[in-house]
Length: 222
Image (tube, rainbow, N blue to C red):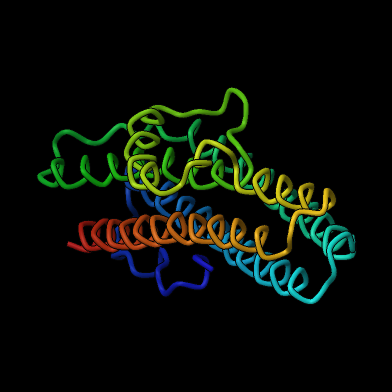
């Protein structure tokens, strides 16, 4: 989790930072925490996929045990997702830092601010890939991020417009209509591959947020 990282206010110089420095520090830590929570969600989703595929391989067609287990896991996952959506909304509302224009570090600080702003729609996008976009919650920059990431999947993932959880439920429904286990597993593996792609994007965002926080701490230490 992001909160366990060796990055804290104690790393600052003895001079108390001003309002804009405090706001940027709070923003960077908030985004790292949110990113850590989204990583936890993706980690849990991977576990669910492994359990589901393994269960389907063991069961006969028409056996609903795997479906029941998945629905229980889905309920917990959706609870985690709703919590992060609320935190993302708060982060959007708090992202209004005014930088001290007299500072010689204005260009770098402005870049750090831009990274924070761009990270919000990316984090929301990777969440929406699992559960579908939350109504009325699309932040500034959503279209750019959505188009950028969809281009990566468009050629090989025909169901990329459908949330991963919905795709899984479609396949479980098909099992109930006697579709072969192997066909369903193949489709689930495709969904799993898409989840992995989004997880890789998430790791890039996490590393970028981490680097910008280190840069901000370095600025305030000099």
